[in-house]
Image 1 (cartoon, rainbow, N blue to C red):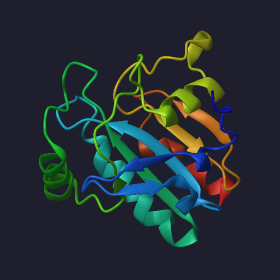
Image 2: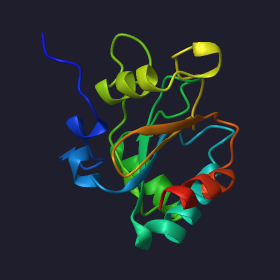
Image 3: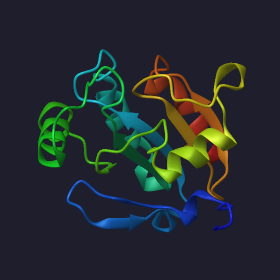
Image 4: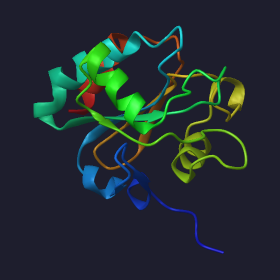
Length: 163
């Protein structure tokens, strides 16, 4: 049995084009990690996510999007469809990853870690819906978890404090 990872930098995930990418790539960056979906009522948040990514990227901020089809089957597409949708409709240039699960036995190890370190309301670890967000500082510490209803622009002040 392997030891529990001590930071998010121990994880890797596949990008939309299938390449494995170590989160160690993002060491010393402030991160916002978001589970996304293309057919959700919160999907227009992609615009706000892209806006804050562009606003802060030059100062060491990265956005990581993880498509997930576990909530109302709102991310039915394959990697190419997801990428095309994000780029065409919202001009997404931040890093998007291959579709994953965020809850249950097949949850991606990164999401198991995030939920363990920063449980949601009332200590419930499960991700409630698409566009749950995790803010991570430059040392890889999970600082805060935001509900799907939290608009990206409402997180800007917290990002600013960490940059």
